[in-house]
Image (cartoon, rainbow, N blue to C red; front, top):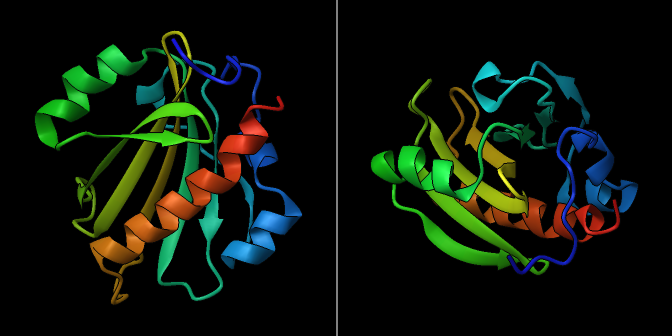
Length: 153
């Protein structure tokens, strides 16, 4: 697998990927640990919060119970996966309505380690006029900001 550096998601604090520079540049209001999704495996962690404009929220999750193959077999059935490169990492983008809220959601999964992924997700806030394009624009910018930091961990 061609990655700049394999990073063990069990040891990573996803909040540590958002630098003060990225926070300012991207207009992120708050950064903090949030409850990890049990679906992503025991020992997974999550970081998230809102942007200054409050149109969208983001989360960065460590997925520790399956890598690209699992992603293709689960997400790939529901939504189309688009292959990308983010800071040298193989990555996969999915977009569409959130299964939980129906709000526009864009997710980018970075292939960070064997059988592990880093998930960057941006979702429209309830009642906001956020579009899928806005969610993906923010998700791509956030992934591009955290990818280079990931390679230093």
